[in-house]
Length: 99
Image (tube, rainbow, N blue to C red; front, side):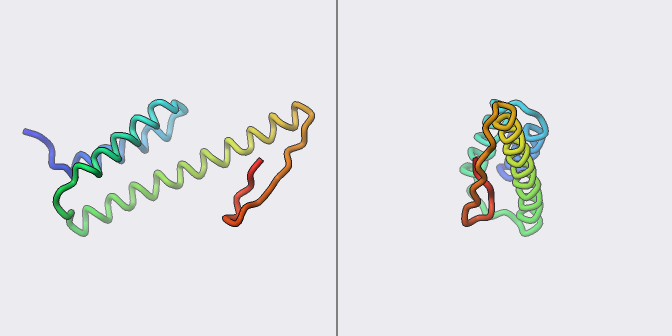
């Protein structure tokens, strides 16, 4: 018996969160691909409770992505400084810095 499509999506979201906790880019990419595939397989409208669960998991994933991005920006700045090049910080319209 196969799992319900929405249960597959929730499992994919949880797998993506677990991958984001690690530093393996291939695992993150595979988990995100699986999540998108599960989204494409949905054929019936989920219940409100299911949607709220998926939204909460997706919000956690988005927060972890932002945290990872900030850490990468800090490391790139430190590497640039160690190489003798002070990073030029430019802030975009979204308020994020870019090196």
